[in-house]
Length: 195
Image (cartoon, rainbow, N blue to C red):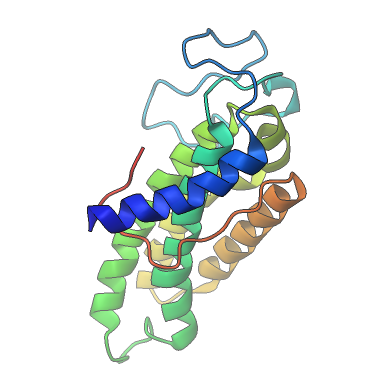
């Protein structure tokens, strides 16, 4: 299993390194005065810490920020579509549907996974000036929205999943427009993630 994950990471990273380049950055340098700080409180939501254009860095503050963003966003968006969006479209979450309990269990696990990966992707977005200006806003709400959507889904209200899908589509579009297209992982492993 680890070999498969390592291969996927290598396959995703090589072209990105060639295209994106590393740019001048150092993981040991202190952030510039215009850099938005990552929240120290893990209970603080991503939207509370979302930078606005004035708080975006002027240069990379973390090495390989774009590459890390693409990895985490690809995992998060792929997990959402595989474990939440596709079962919703297939009617698996409906009352009396075959496999409903399993779909809810996988969906709940996927929601936690998506929330974590979006948080990690947000940290990487805040470390790169291009990403910060183009994708910070749509990305900030995805983590909390997906958890709320799963909670509403348990009560039979599936409308929130459509909103999360729309937000993900918006984030992917903004990322592509910024020159960093996200490639979703179609088979994300919800039990482990490289950092």
